[in-house]
Structures are given as structure tokens and as C-alpha cells.
Length: 218
Ligand SMILES: O=C(O)COP(=O)(O)O
Image (cartoon, rainbow, N blue to C red; front, side, top):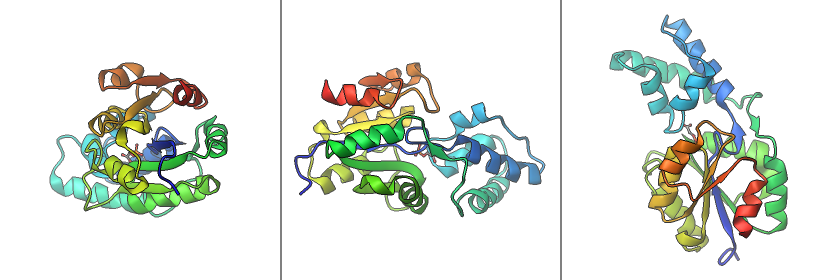
């Protein structure tokens, strides 16, 4: 029975897991091989969030489609084919999930990371927490900030969107939450700042994962 249970949907990159270094290292490797300019980690925090195609677009503004295709192929080979050891849950995430498990919440993930890879990371890092709906980017479903992925989760769990908390670290997540009529929690340990989250509709801002417990009990 899942109906009626309290529900939280989490974004993955920048919210549950700190993946930025592995993404940056892989992309820089591909760029270097092709003699293209590389970027610092802080730049990647703004490139990531809308899926791998947009990551490539952001890193290659002004380049030809041919080069973009080559980088995309190279990045998928470099990054998407294995789990990366520097990618870890943020400090406090396991403590938060322990509490949410005790409270018997429905836990879900909605990411713009490729679907198979999203599932692989959740299985690898969070298999003890019973995430009930886990969705990455799929060809047939428009990616965030389109609300359809979030609405589909609500429908699958039979929970009204208005009762669901959506937790994320970027404007894409806040826009998704608001378009789906969910409660948007913006987190400050991820890739973007408070101003971006508030401007894009965050209902709550949290500085540490355990602060989410205060929000959901308020
Ligand atoms: O891979 C991305 O671009 C973003 O993934 P996220 O939706 O989990 O932040």
C-alpha cells in the first residue's frame, strides 16, 4: 500500500550525490583529446542540470554540430559506462534517508541523468532505502523542467501532487516542482545558489540535508 503515504521526490546530481568532479574530469578528458578548451569544476556546476546533450552544448558554444556529436559520443563512452568512485552522497544524506525510512516515507528520484545510469547509482549508493520510483532521462519522456516525469511519479504512487515535496538544487528542479504543483525545496549544498532557487519558485531553502526534516514536519 503506497497511497496516502508522505512522499518526497529527489533530484540526483547536486542533491543526493556530489557527482560534479567525475563529470568535469570525464568531460575535460574528452575535450583535451580533441584539443578543445577545458573548464573548471565551478563552470561545470552551471553546465550540468539539463541532461548530457545540454552539458555538451554548454561546453561547446559556437562549435560545429559535428564536433558536438563527437564530444557527446566521447563523453558517453568516458562517463556513462561505469560508476565513478568520487561520486558520493553529500554529507548528511544517509542520516536524512535513515530518518525518512523510519518515518516510512515514499522516496523517489527524478533526474535528467540518463535513465539506466540513474538507476545504477541509486542501486549502488541507496539500495537499503527502498526508493520506490526511480527515473532518469528517457527518450519518450520530456526532461525536467517539463513536469510530466514528476506527475507520472505522483500518479504511480496515487498521491496528489500538492502533497509531494520535490527536492532539488537547480532552477530546473524548482521549475519542475512548481509546474507539477508540488512543494519545492531548494538545497544549498549542490550546484547553484539561493537566489537562483528563490527566483525559480523555491518554497523552502535548506542548508543541510537534516533541515529537510524540519520542513516536512512544519
Ligand atoms: O545530468 C544532469 O544534467 C542532471 O542530472 P540531475 O537532474 O540529477 O541534476
